[in-house]
Image (cartoon, rainbow, N blue to C red; front, side, top):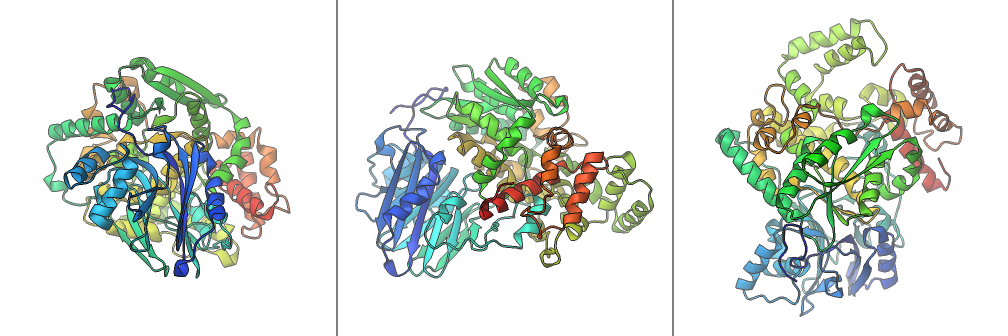
Length: 639
């Protein structure tokens, strides 16, 4: 292999994107090769290009391969050290593997391949469990140490690559997806009732929880050690830096540093032996990704956008088209309408549990479109988390300045105001005034979540009434107590919404069609630098992403910089009132699986209010629909 030009043709070989799975059995029992193969087969979509299994006394590893770099059999996994003392199954990319390789070479290591998988395994043997701290990339790593009879698992810092675990008295399992765990014999697939109110509140079950009682998600930036007696030791090896903003660089120095770090990140993520493109929404983040790609590429960048042909207010393709024209990309667009809602069954299968973000639909469609042309796509994910791009951050900062006594008075005033229609100006004012009296965690959830506390109490059966719904938010806000107010909110978002909603959505929908995605904004050096900048650099008056826009003012077209923030929102409201109204009604049938978890009269009320326009319950109905599909699949029926 040879070093790449800026278009990414050739480089040192690297690991493929893929799916991994494995088992540790108590007392050194040898696992079944067939059972391990069955785990891998459930994730064939993550790795259609090959498979591999390795069996040891007490453990086994299973791998599915999606060839991205080094398309030869030399990149096959599981991969073992020459002396057989350790073997690795790896999902992801290590972007700094050359530097780690050079350090290992100076320490006497030689390599049979030029890939990052072998480098990661050698780094483990040389540096021990702390080798994860030296790796920069997106990864889920499993290493079986034959010498010490232990399994090491590690997940990347921000949670780009998934990793789930299961244990009972006789076995410990891990896999990239829940379906692979469920494929292993003797797994207890009982559901966790406490997950339902959390899902209805957030649209997901916060890490480490899942909808299954005995399955949990390994948190990002975490290593887990399991021995043959199934004893576990879990530690965090990294966290977002908080506090110390007073020592930040001045604005112009910060702009220069951000430009350099971001461009380096984009360049590293363009490395591939297969075609590379980019998702393009027409927002700031994807615009900058495409702009930076265009600067270092010797060929036109391939860009892909998606819109809604029956909902112009939700369609961002005109802005994407303007960016494509600005950077002379080879641009492809696709339009989605309500007929794509039939994908819901496929989506439910891909997530293995209910998932509340309806933008999974267009994400799947744009991934499938993109995969017809390229195998790797760069995304703008993480830009809002780093630079304060969501409107709720600006709203939260305003409310943080309201004294508590005044907040209670405003809440009392809100209760006396007339007006029942949720979307009316008076309805919006009442909700805004009421939010001032909420705790910081509850206030953020009121913007970022779905069902509120009062709605949950009305919706759920008595045995499912929620307990500490805001526990995960409260924990992360406390962990960032040393940060300034805005950075504290950014920390909360980076530890909750990013790994539990945004990244799983992109991973599942892209891997469902065997497309690898890479997120330049999630580069560790960039994150660590930007998180130490004061909040006023990111939210400057009414301007969000102020420092980012200032740093790249030459790359952002004026019409893109001035447009308000617009999320990747599906027009569920009009769909559920119009062409899909009959299917919403079907959700209320007597044999629906959501009953008796949910009160029938509550579901009937929100469907009625949505239909007559009293309130837009579109996103909430989507949550119920996904829950119904999940439960129907377990009971062998269809929603």
